[in-house]
Length: 195
Image (cartoon, rainbow, N blue to C red; front, side, top):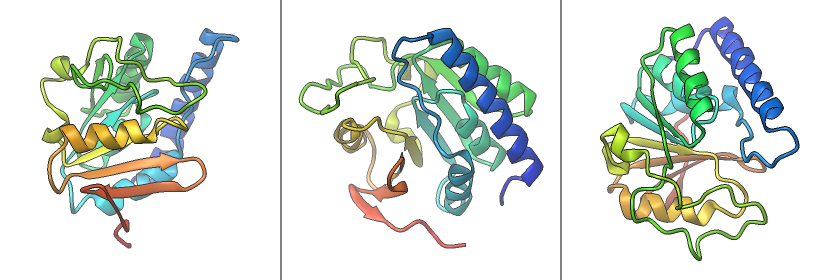
């Protein structure tokens, strides 16, 4: 299963509009949100569809990847700390007739500490905000597929989060500007299924 090219193009355009509004709202302040490769995410998610039915995005930004996951047939959820981005994501889901769920809060489970796990000049993750997991009503380990776009230097924190709060056999997909999409299972890098 994949998204029709027109749907993907429309979703990319809508997500870009949200990104542009976000940049305008933030002005010169550091905003810690950079969109990932939506077309690449759709391809990776389509390849993994036979291996997973539920999906959660940690730091869902514009919501485009979570909406795409829902359109591909996943039971999809996104956690985002910026309330206005959650509102924009919900509007995006409505526009594309998606059942994707979005909650406001940190993607860090309650009690998870980031000290010593972040080696970044511009860390975007903090354990000071309330966790979104309570509002979601699920835990990291409840999802077959976890997705994140780690800020450079925050990778170890994401790996530890999934290791400590995930479950055996769970899939963890990350996007990296230099490597593209990388799939892990039980801490090991594994190949994405072929087409």
